[in-house]
Image (tube, rainbow, N blue to C red; front, side):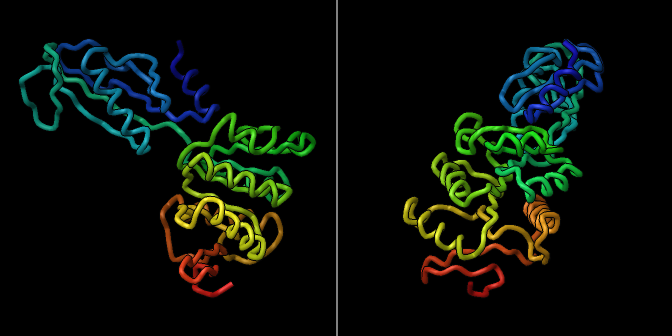
Length: 285
């Protein structure tokens, strides 16, 4: 098995992973410098960094790092009962010291675009200039066949894709289908399956939004968490062409991804006490 071929394969499938490499060894131990292991977010692993307690601990550490998207350099003393500065002692008797480097490999963010129309294409053109993994879903075969730059193209009904393939928790989801009916079906399915994205944006006018959200709160209850829901979508930059809208949406995605505030969003938020919608600057719609 070529471990780099495996990494390339899983990157194309948008499966994030940790590459663990033995970068230093002093004294006796069950592995040599340069040995590698990959740990997938699906809890599978390939390759080895020595087996035994060392590899068990490495896999447990990978579970934390793949979720937090972090790198780590850490040393281990393979001699139970002994202590060494800045080194974790493992229950082994080899007596050596091993250092592992854990490297997160995956996209900056995972993005799903429901709708392969003009805005969807313009948006993907911008997103793919950065380290985003983008899946585009649309049931219109002719539109999908002409789409460019996405990592994955899914030519099937929108809700069917969610039910069959699922969506990653903590992902970014943009809903810009050819019909508000389909938009609503996508968002309702996400709520029904209790998928929690980092960002769920719907291309929509304030008027259409109000009628949809009234129905949504009636169906799912007013206590439902829509803190990740953004509509109308994008930062308030001005401009109405697909390219200008794409830059507005991308800017909003980046602001959420980096945790940056104090921006003027197009988004409306619900005031449950008085039952009206207002934008984030406090102006009533």
